[in-house]
Image: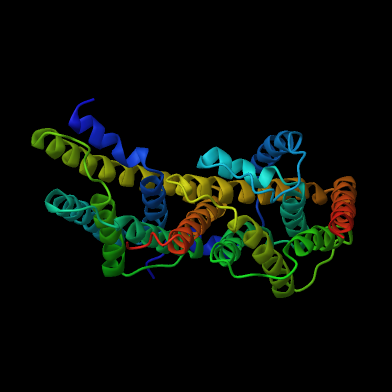
Length: 174
Length: 214
């Protein structure tokens, strides 16, 4: 599999990344148009920044904990149907994107393949975020939006359990 | 107000319609099929990693399962907003209980509380009890903490902990939805009797669990 294709699929292969993107999509879809646009821009910038950081990182990061924290926040906000100011939406999306990027180190032996993998990961993450947001829009019209809120609640609960598990095992921010 | 209006109105709106009943019924049938292959008691410590392990864990414990279904059934008698608040609020509260269990904070008589939850919730359904929603929520939340504590202490620490947690939470939520679906039968007189009878059966099962612990 080429580096680009591998990168495109990477966010789908990691359960924590899928969970984070779904939770963020649910949360952002509920927001006003300006906040959604700000979130989209924030996410793209965050992913780019996170991938750039991992490209220059000397050692692995503990970005997974940041990603799970962002997932917890996004899921809880979606479950509570809370409106967010544009700046907060952008920051939440940016945090999620940056953590996702920093948690996606490429598994490649050549610089070219690694670079293509990182580019693919960035494109893939943005595409999945868009798909998650569109899907959340469809859910919003279903049964008075209750399934959307239930999914947000499940995302938050799952993230909380994993964060607690990592804390208890001494894995958090190690 | 940045929030979209349709969602905002739904928070104050009417109960779920017939399309919801059909959808819930499909989920209920799927879960009843799963019920048929769930003979063991919960909390045996045999949790495996991954989504399938997490999803199957709540379904392989009849004490946990009947209590979750009873929560959904009770929602049918409590009506809106409790009927849809329960599947939204219960998983995070249960996860808080799970956090307590994961962190090793002891709770007294966890298994007794779980058996008691089936009995009490079953009685509430059988009596078609309609206390104030705050009292119902408090009662369910207390039981949720104990259920979460029991399961939280069994979460695996492998690389697939995220998938396991997603499966575990989804299965628990689907059990609620199965209960809500069955509870929709209470719209009709015969169905109401069937739902109340199911509550009685759950209460009896809870009593059996209690005697088994004792």
